Image (cartoon, rainbow, N blue to C red; front, side, top):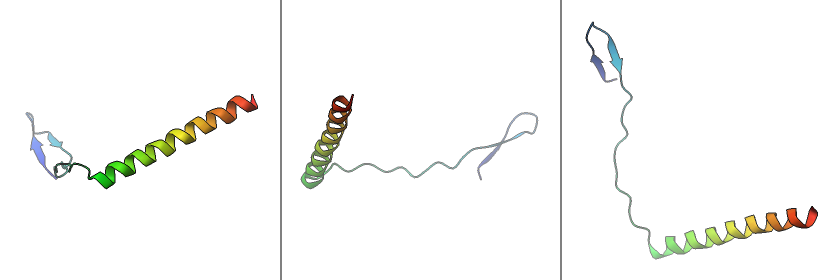
Length: 56
């Protein structure tokens, strides 16, 4: 654990920082998958809203 000593002898404990990495740009297949999942999610939300409207 990384400790630092402050004035007066108090110890201060800091959390470990995670390793940094850079994100890769999505490939064309991943972009298509994101689009399909977004369309399915939108369809699900609109379907639930339509059911709520019809029931009420």
